[in-house]
Length: 56
Image (spheres, rainbow, N blue to C red):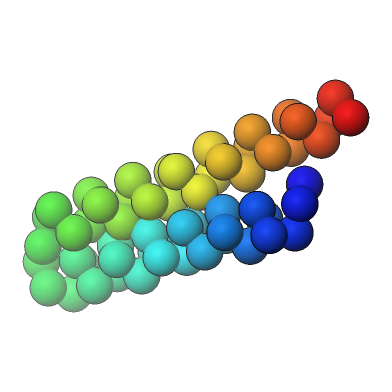
């Protein structure tokens, strides 16, 4: 996996965790959902990169 892609994917995951935490603190269900979606997006991208690496 390219280092830049790995960093970007982890950043998406961390951004999602932060959004989810802020959403919980503010009792904002939409922000919580957006945070969970960002985390999922980062995790899916990481999994895709690992699959690509396995076939190289």
